[in-house]
Length: 463
Ligand code: FAD
Image 1 (cartoon, rainbow, N blue to C red):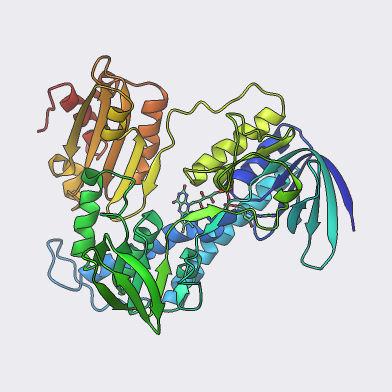
Image 2: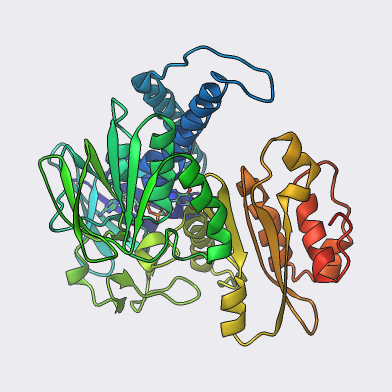
């Protein structure tokens, strides 16, 4: 049993924890990071990265398939085949490169990484249970909790070989003939669409009256249309009540009970904070339901204990966790830093993709703003035409009185790459005139942003 002392202890090596560790190391703070599984956390190992890799495989396969029949581009391909284990191995390779890179960055920042599960003994001391049965004790001046989240399991649909979470869906060896996705949020839709493109007959069951209920109907419209084109069955207002022998029992919107046959049932009904085994019972932290309550400097209610990322609440997104990771290290180093972000952009990597930065029109109204809302469709954008993707639009929400941009949303193929620009405009306090007056390169789909701003000002040029 080894005993360590350090200035900063980070528990959890996901995007929140590893960024906090790197930044603390850069600031010269003696830092230890404890990780129970693999550095990179959910995001790099079983979340953002592997899901986007699988989506890429599915997109390539669908594109190849399209060329097996007559098409406007004059390309012909004969019977493309998918070797899923090979694709999964490629995906694992991408994950391995990134997690290896993170381990290297931690080393470069002189962060000591200890593999094991950390449990609080008191507000300054943590015991780490290691795989070899040994345990270490670490005493630290400041402790950052970055233990992330886990998939919610339905009591009447426990995870098994055939009832899988997103983690299971990212490691299948064969494409299921029939896949039932329970939960129409972004994770369920991203994976459901990917498997549909790889050949599964997909049914999505969602309790709300439409999929992706966090976004307004105008934004989700093009995605709903695409789900239909892909032949995905969507049951909204419907509730899964159980599963037996390859069949899922659903009470549909009319109250009728239906049975959906499926080789695999993918349950994506949400994620909850992960604090199992952490020994929170040995502390006296203020909680917000199951989340750890923090202030705008990521401080918990106990002096010297901080928390960041998914374990602190919504939105559970990797870039929020990373921003908090950097902030908390600055705070511990004594810098006068605090959370004053205007927006945390959110993206659904569906087909088409959805981006939302800042306030959607209804949210702006509820916040008491009088607004101008304008959208510019990709069907009037040259670059979108050259890419054969005229579906979707970019929309701007601005204050009526001073034209301050409150929100920018978009739906379109590959539109996620524009999210950073939308966020920058809002963080910088851009007005409609700033966006309208910025020269946007031609031909790009970004021109639709400039045109939306011009339209909001009353004079779109290409519509
Ligand atoms: P995590 O990444 O969950 O990391 C926590 C780490 O703590 C884990 O490695 C865990 O092993 C470790 N740990 C837990 N308890 C202990 C303990 N007691 N001792 C030691 N270590 C411990 N977000 C996006 O922004 N974009 C996306 O495209 C996106 N796609 C996603 C797709 C899927 C399928 C999933 C599941 C999630 C996705 N997310 C996405 C969400 C994103 O993964 C999380 O928001 C992010 O990983 C949260 O980071 P974190 O550092 O808070 O926690």
